[in-house]
Image 1 (cartoon, rainbow, N blue to C red):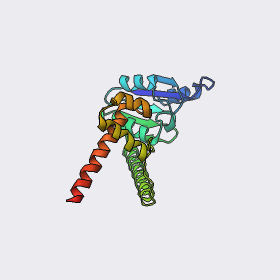
Image 2: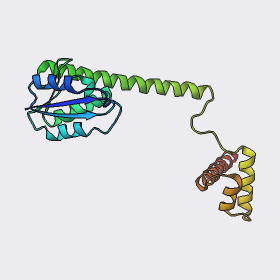
Image 3: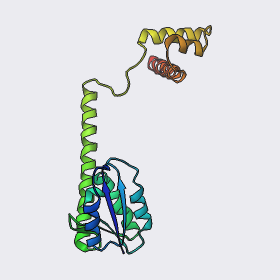
Image 4: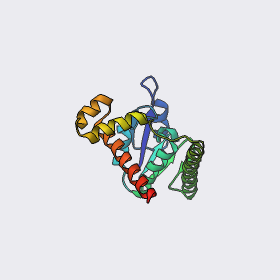
Length: 195
């Protein structure tokens, strides 16, 4: 059985063109959504995926009607393949129930993987260059070294509670313990180097 899925981005648009194309393609049941391409919640798509059975084919008018991105599209089609459900896109003339359609899908998968690797490589290269130039990622330290030193001195004197120190320096309790932990690690490292 051919199961159709159609989507429009806004209520101003009309599903009629997609519906006619899906009916002409032989879809016996059609599900729809009115949602932008970036929206994650698509109840019509979930209903179509739940309704389709082994041997059925999910049919869309165009690829962009199904997936939010190439990665999402590949994930959905992989789910269908795992359930032995075919996929067809009318405009792109892709049909995963044929050997040619399977080849096109595998090329899409390879390109998506290639794109992910390129992004990962660029990100790592950018971080490495930033580190070489002395830039460190993350949020900047809230307190300067003098403030940290004084705060920890007060803590070690034992006259002021952690809660009071946190209020005085406008920091959270976890931040205080992070400063304390870093100071202790530095003291241990200094002691080891002095040996």
